[in-house]
Image (cartoon, rainbow over all chains, first blue to last red; front, side, top):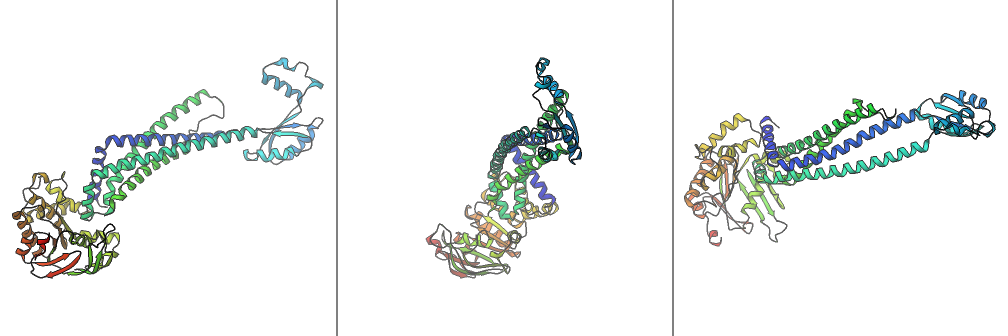
Length: 294
Length: 232
């Protein structure tokens, strides 16, 4: 396509946008909403991923000993295991004190000291890396004298389940909205094509190529897509920055730290821009296709 | 230049073919009238040569190329070598006379310099110098058709295909347009005109190809409309 064709396409694209300004604005708005939801979902997914990694990295295996088991035997086996990074013996007397502190009532100790202590001796074991926690717990369960080894897999499993369910819901919602936005783009561009149907017909008779005819409409769709995406990115960026700042100030817990690494955030925004452009472009191509068959 | 060999064209919703087993040859530089009653197949024949339609059977060649076998790029090149003129002018009413003619070159990507040189020349050829800034609605029917002709010739076509170009014009305007087509033809451009204007056909003494029910019934050099107009 040469310069004069490009100029013609630009001029016609701008004219069409001005003619359908309201519909183009509504379409850009729907694109903005659908992409903001999708972007929000992706940001949530990145944050949940990081949270899960933090939890897994800090997981400890609580190894409860059988009544009468020798802590020195278990300690020796733990020291020899390749996946163990560190371990700490918590005798049952200390365990009882910690338990009472957790409950916030020292009176709880009354009558449970010595022979009456119901708690077993306990080892707190850290694995050399997060991926080895499950394997290490399985190995430790096989040690003679070990009653049970627990690292909260149920909680982790439930967290993963909820996250997957949330992911699917948000992905479904944003896909439906994105589909609706594409239909709206198709309608907007089709209105432009119908308004210029005579011109398109004459262009075919004059020997214009399909790409020449399609270009102004493609431009219109892409501009609508970009505008919507731009709104989505600005809204999402500002909202996320606000949320991240407030969460960091609150310092709720060590594992709810929002992701602020640009290497993780920027690809999401870049992906949204690409998706918005594709939505605009595909919508335009679908709209014009029927009118090019002359 | 154009050769039709046993060409037939049927439309899905019609029992009879629009063109039936028609063979015809038109040489470079010829002036041909296509005559016949409404529904004789004249417009379909023009659409087949423009490759807006493809034949149901038979073969059409243009400058030795089989039109059915043209690829997208070749089809564009083929259409750019043809100037189309319509009964209803098909001008863009929001564009001026100059812009309508320039549009023919813009859409095929010709450079601005060439457009600035060729458009005034084409307008001068059809006698519309001074009307460049007028909009189609401000022109008479004859003038609008002249714009249509200027748009067709501005890209230097090998052939002009005109479908009832004088259908909406009075006799005087129609005669002037026919003379304009003759001038264009004298410069070497092949002209094929489908028309009902029997008096003009008789007056101009050009080759006449008469059609009826999709078939060729007469092909005469320096011919006349004949009796076909009596049945229109």
